[in-house]
Each structure stands twice: as structure tokens, then as C-alpha cells.
Amino acid sequence: MVLQSLKSRIFNDASKYATKWLHELPHVIWGLRTQKSWATSYTPFFMVYGSEVVLPSDVVFGAPRIQYYEDGEAEKSRRVDIDSLKEHRVVALIQHARHEQQIWRYHDRNVRERSFNVGDLVLRRIQSTKDMHKLAAP
Image (cartoon, rainbow, N blue to C red; front, side, top):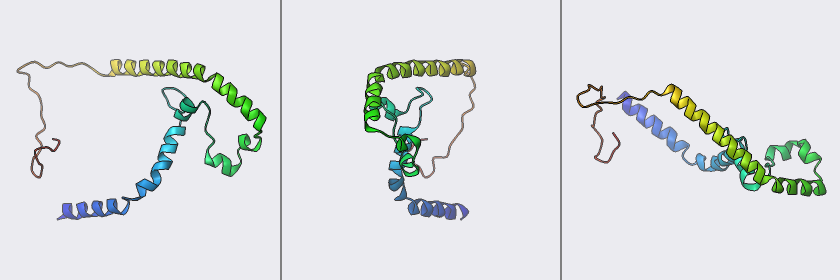
């Protein structure tokens, strides 16, 4: 009985918020595109467009780069960014390779290889198949 009430409460909460994710999705995607990657130290937006994004909060609160904006200087800066984009991508590629090497070193240091032979005893968790159909994941 307790399990049934818990299931119904979870289902009701999920249905209450079911349509809100669609409203929040653009904000989440924007956040992912404007956050620096650990692997490259650049934002995905910069890697695609060659310049840093102007955040809506910068516009609303009047960040210095918005307050001191000049068309001529912005155009010069944009040309410099476009000219140096290839260099930034090479730096990002090197940084990504370095990050990947660190991950491999961590893996090699902390993960131990095991091999099993026929006849070895292995602990296996037995799961109930009640209320599962033949295509359900075990």
C-alpha cells in the first residue's frame, strides 16, 4: 500500500512539471553553450563563432564591454578574432589532448584489470523479473 501511494505521488509530481521542461530547455542549452569546457578551456560558442557571447545579463546590468562599445573598435576586434580563430582552435586541440592524457593516466592508475577463467566463482545479483516484459532491461 505504501509503495502504491509513493508511485502515485511521484507520478502526480512528474505530471505537474511535465510541460515546464520545454520552457526551461532554451536556458539550459544557452548555459551549456556559454560555459567553458574543462577539456578545451573555451566555450562551444567561441569555437563555432570565433568570439565570446554577450550574455543577456551583461546587457541588462550594463557590463563594461557593453557600456564602452564602439562600432569601429568592435569591427577591428572582430577581424582580429576571426584571424586568430585557427590559432585558438589549435590551442583548444592541444588542451583537449592534454586533458585526455590526464584521464587516461587517472584510469590506468585507479582501474585494475581482472580476468576471469572458467570455473571461477562470481557473485551474481539475482533480480526479480516480476512485472517485467521480455524486452525490459534486466
